[in-house]
Length: 613
Image (cartoon, rainbow, N blue to C red; front, side):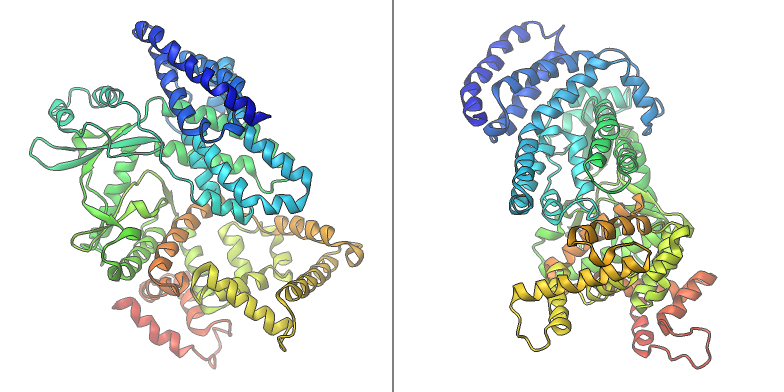
């Protein structure tokens, strides 16, 4: 019925858009915000509504258009800003928008209309039962990615951030959101030109710079778009200009996510501190709006690189200071190829190793980590250098956290899993008052199993194959069970182990609980013992991207092994007590490191020299 109504309503809706255009054109000087809203609604209908007629009805489109017009007119008034200090502040945003209920209502209804089709389909799956939820998960994940794209920049960024939250989302949704593209239609060049003039003011050479810009942007993303041009002296440049009204849009969307969507998601059972997660996202999104901070991040990276052995092999595009501001960023133009599309595939392994060393140095030495290394931001230049683009999202890594990460990586390399519960506390994964429970639990055992498999390389596919082989060796050494029978045997063993662990923790009735109760109790217990600190999301995003690029050129690529040379050199050249303790763990593993008769791992000692080659 929804599809039939949408099909019938589409001609009328398109006619409505076309019919209102001449009247609005005549009133452009007065109704410029309305004109922009009409164009935005037209583009969104063409890109989204026509692709998904079953998910958008004619009435919904008409309401959406009217609400969008109201929201634009309301948003155009006044010079107040939702974030007066230009930093994420949920309290300031709440105080700002509580005085603008129409604007909030318009956006809230828009979110509801655009997501109604996906929500209805998901509800239908839920009513049909777990089998339907599992069978349709891949399709629903792709639908969700398209809905987020239609909802605009904030939700595109939120989807990308959620794509690494395996603790929140099922694997099909992780895969679906991983494919989410940060690309939307460009905004008009005359608006971009006006904003550039406003930002750069009377700087000498601005008009010549504007005259040199390409007629259309060479790239358009959710927060801004890039033009190619040249300085008065002929130096080619890339000029990035922010979309108009972005701060206000993000502030409103983050307010709705934080105050409405996060509590709703918690109410239906999504685990974790979702309001805290929303705040972490908001801080990152708003920070990306400050192009002057992005320029400073890039300049700091180049300065740090020049002082070490990476000098001359990796760089960020140099910033052109006189033509940059909070909403305009001008850098020298860099010709290069994306690593995942490189025409010199034989050079990709070297560049992957270089990228890994660079990111480890950023995280564990410089203290500022580039958090958005998707393939489009990593270029191979004609000289074979690595160029890292887009420094808007970075993570500060304090020295104490640097050493905690070094210790954890050293313990992983040494397979010193007994030391990991203390690492979890120092890294913020485990509350200090839960340390003894973690030591007594099977969490470390499970993690050690995963890390042992991960260290062998090959990514997810080969890891799964090795896990199946271990299951076969443990539960079916004779090879007599079918795949289905082996899975059943593994589940049976897992549930028995879970019941035993719950009983040890004092959970009564575990021995007679059904499977669903066992799972729910284990999840609840593990959430008490283990949490995901916000900073680790950015670390995981960075290094999972590097692993993906590495696997594209080497199917046996191991991110754990790749980190070993840098870690070896760092530990051998760092005189701090914590570094020395981590080095002893690397050399002696889980043995008594202070005993005079402890046996060093000679192969590891010899391979440590790789860090100096």
